[in-house]
Image (cartoon, rainbow, N blue to C red; front, side, top):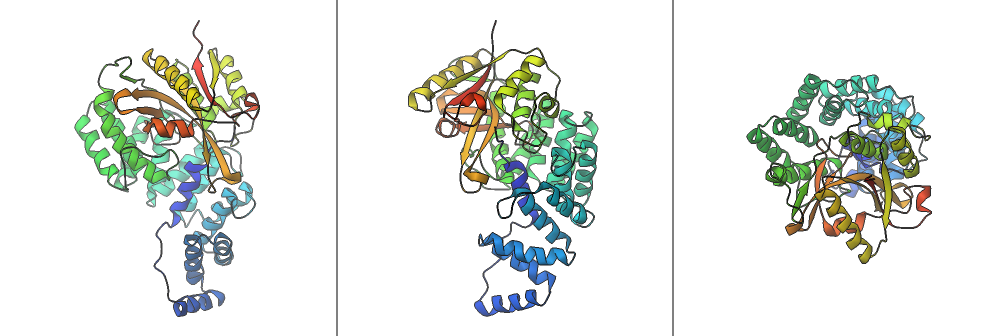
Length: 420
């Protein structure tokens, strides 16, 4: 099962998402002349303009020129292209080399280098080094790096759990107006019973990017975090009230923020922790035969659950309207009984390598009167909670590549706790 690469790939785009104003033809010609003459600043301006115009090949050409001249931001730009693999053949080892070369000068490169160490991309996994590079990037003003490190310390994922470090780094992310860090900091307040403080910071985070009644599962990272803050504001009262079978259910799950391409194992580790397990996402991945940093077959995930003494079963429903009605009836029955359900999503679009990507996450609640479901998503900030409409759930909960068990047939797959 190929996991969605959105959390890392969209984070990499943070290097410069500001769309530059259009230039007159004479101005553009002058900029090209400067770039051709070896002006590194002009080369990067052209790289960003070409990227904004979706001319990725030319953008990479100019970024390569600037990187060859030693420009750190250009090295990060080129490294990200090799990591993503949309414009040039994906090569994590080359990406890692570019990030490492630029990491002492570029906060974005330091963040991406940490991602490579954390997710075994182009190098062996070294979570301690990842955390050090994220903290270095955070010191230089990279909010997402601070948030990523905070979530790792908070969950004890790849590193020993450290509440003090987690709080300090979440506060640093909030200082830098990073919405994912603000989501986590608000959750720390909420769990401590400081609901007014949680409400204040989630309100602040929700205003950093446009939000709606609910979000979209494949939003860019910062947009998703702002929407997540808005969702958490809506969920505050629900999370403090008792479940009402048939009307409302919420199952609290321990959250782990996933590493690169590790949604399946991380979602399953969260599911296992809910049932009393102690493994992290990387620990769960090591119980499977596929290498770190690669997608995980659902059959292997099911085998791994047995290795740790847990009992799950795979259930599937047809991808039509009747299948969705049956699937959501199952969801509500499980949630009313206090049991979350692991599901697999399929995203389709040109922004994904090969035109589509999969993503594993859990459904942990529903609000019947608003036809909403509550997700626990390893790809978003802790606590991982998001609202999704029934319409969007119907569109995204489907997969024909969750593993060999799918036999290439499109269905709505789920892991549920196998009751004795």
